Amino acid sequence: MIREGIALNLIESHDLTLAYEGVIAAEHVTFTLAPGDYLCVVGENGSGKSTLLKAITGEVKPAGGLLSIAPEVKKNGIGYLPQISKIQRDFPASVREVVLSGCVRGDGRGFLWTRAAQKRAADAMDMLGVADLAQKTLGDLSGGQRQRVLLARAMCASDTLLLLDEPVTGLDPEAVHGMYEAIRRINRERGCAVMMVSHDVSCALREAEHVLSLCRGHAFYGTVEGYRRHEKLDDEADDARHRHGGEHAPAAPHYVAEKGGLV
Amino acid sequence: MSISEILSSPFLLRVIGRALTVGVLVSLCSAVLGVSLVLKRYSMIGDGLSHVGFLGIALASCAGVGSLYSMEISIPVVILASVLILRLSQNNGRLNGDAACAVVSTGAVAVGTLLYNVTGGRAGDICSSLFGSASVVTISDKDMWISVLLSAVVIGWFLLSFKTIFAVTFDETFAHAAGIRTNLFGLVLSVLTGVTIVVGMKMMGAIMISAILIFPSLTAMRLTGNFRRTVILSAAISVACFITGFFAACFFSLQTGAAVVTVNLAVFCAVYGIAWIAGKSKQKRTA
Image 1: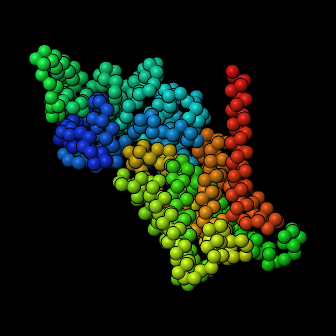
Image 2: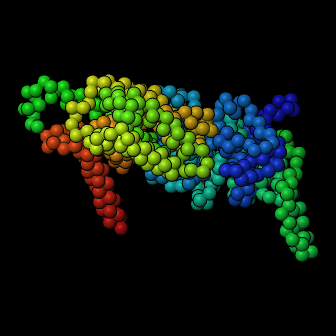
Image 3: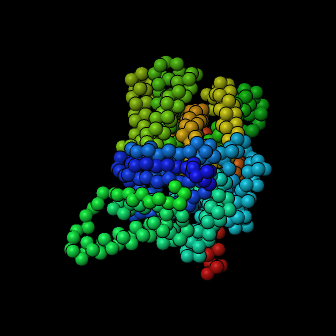
């Protein structure tokens, strides 16, 4: 949403340094996330993708640089989808209980859920096609179903911002397709900003509007088209270096700021 | 003791009524708190705190206030320890949660035992604080009122913030992102656990008290895949096991704590055994 040419960003990060358990995970991270945007964060293992999400939720303090989160996000909460492995399989919780727990911020008091929360959870389950699983135990579901349930929970938690940590890792192709479609619908129909961490670069590029790459030496932030051009240039440079027999120098992360549509 | 003996003596009735009240309320609290403890992988915190409770009692006997005021000393000690253990296990520092618990609990037992030695405490005192008192006569009116107060707080907390308790137990990261103060939850959980342990320790003993935190919730988890039902079932199982164990101890002159834990163990084994056989036969049918 651009109001008279001024984008009120949900997240602004400038030259951010992130450290996890005393080790620097990422440096010079610069990006912005506007309301309704769809940003994909790519990078190899250990490039600090998950740490970046933790910094946004406030679990990890930035080690340097600037990370500002709009008051709107703090007020409305963040819908977070954790990595698959983080949820215990033997936890006794029904699908309905899990999705309802997304409404905990607005409705955390008391023993029974309010009607509004029940409606919100029912809508989310309908939208993600898990309504008929409501009474099942979460641990009995397939990987794809479980991720959709956790996405429904995240939807209940926030209309403003969803943070998705590797939402499709370990899913079969059909389930991956279903997840991406669901995320796209939440983004487009509800205008909810999405920030997704992913391994699957090609799919992420097809789905997202903006890309933040934390790859060492390939750091980038901008639109998807810009990222494609950037990667192409990088590949050519790599080829050239290869032809000249040069070493693949561990270049310092260098961010190419690209003027994107919204920013 | 026989039933007619108990019924004919007002004194025995009073003593048994008091002990039964304390036991039922403590079983209720521990079963309810235990579900969150087990699911959050905090079982060791419960165990660690019970050993700190032993230190508390030793300190009370050292200060010469005897068993009548032991709670005034052991409750603050255990609360302090629960905050300490939580801090040690939460910061991603040099000690991990497991090790932190082991350090605090074994340390507390060692210091407690030395305190008994130094102050010339009898071996019987150590024995009864470790394994529970041999007779329920030692349960006082004060114990009863404290357990009533404690269970009011625990049950009240669960009824008033059940939804938050579920959200944080299920997924702390998510709850934190959604804007819940998850640290406060951990603190309340471990402080209430600590107080429950101190209140129940006189009857159950420091070594065995953590069993009634863990067994009922594990048994209940095997029976249902729904959190609310797990909590209710855990409470019901815990109270039923306590009453069974308590009367078995009365009639056959057994140690109450050991009897209650054994009943819990039997129910746990029965449920897991039946579930295992049911799972096997299901496999056979589908094969």
